[in-house]
Length: 141
Image (cartoon, rainbow, N blue to C red):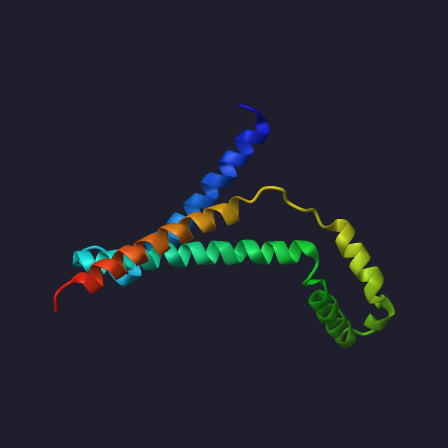
């Protein structure tokens, strides 16, 4: 197996492990072990949905950050910090130069393991939600 494929497999395994850990934590908090079947399906839905949405949102934030959307916030915070440092205003630079320097140092990632893992767990959560919804509303009162 090539080195690139090995590292990609390790990234997917780490992402899957993190999502599984989040799911297990939700199971533990909600009391999955020892509940009825209908409640367990609801807890399964919650666990997979929470981990899926967190991973997907994290992937979205990484994409936004990689495109340079958060550089402005860093520039403002840096200038606020420099106002409280004696002689800090001498290190002031124009936003265009700051953005150019930051964009040159950024590297873009080509793999989407966090997004794929998040969407997979999100899909499983939606499937469990549909199963719970169908079973819950078909039960006689």
